[in-house]
Length: 191
Image (cartoon, rainbow, N blue to C red; front, side, top):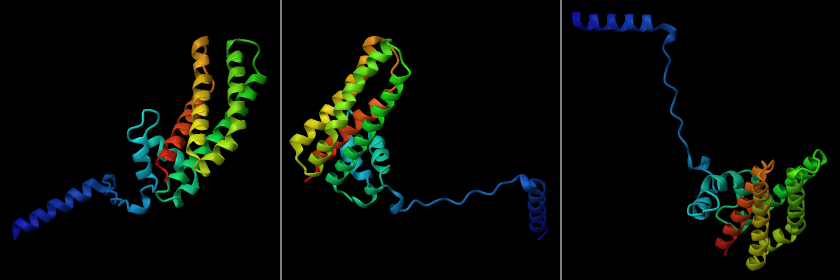
């Protein structure tokens, strides 16, 4: 009995000396299946072996559009969402390029931006038809259009490299390229 009383006394002393500095462990958070993105299986299928984009890019891109939550495993719907994201990207990139050109003279960066302006102008012009081809699952037409968009983004970025100047639209070009490749990959899986 004396040993038990001593053990309790030691425990109480330890608790008293620890005082408010002791923190209690946070409760463990349990992730339910409803918190796992519904797009993850589709993204693993198309992004798992892709050399153009990864699973994370796919999840982040499709997850940025609320329509993805209701698409289930509908690759055609996901492809249409990616095509719409590409349209938005191309439109905002074209506007950014226009704004950058307003502040530039005629240096190498301005020349590259003018080239990009033409490339993105073409993408923006073609994109409504491209998105319609994706929605209509006209795979040949849609894939060709998406590949042209990817090539335009790559050509824009490569122009800066050839001119040995920093690109102010690297992130936008990268996203446009990946979105075009994502839309094409998802369309390939659509039935």
